[in-house]
Image (cartoon, rainbow, N blue to C red):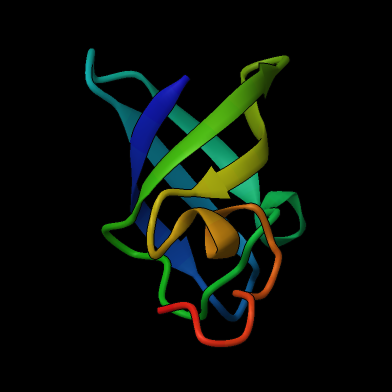
Amino acid sequence: MHGQIIKFRDDLGFGVIRTDDGSRFRFTRNEIKNPNGKLLGLDADFLLDTRRAKDIILMHGSTWTAFGGSAPAGAQ
């Protein structure tokens, strides 16, 4: 599924993703595969598990950062 992070409580490690159809799904920080510090407002791709988002990939930066790798030397 695809959505946007609309809430995140850094002190608790919990947040909410809203999909285009208005559905909302809770998630925990440890479900994010490529954390980036700032989460609020980022688009995310994720799987559902009993109405909770899991295996969340933040859609920002390059393909290298989206899948958790570091960019090769000289790549921008």
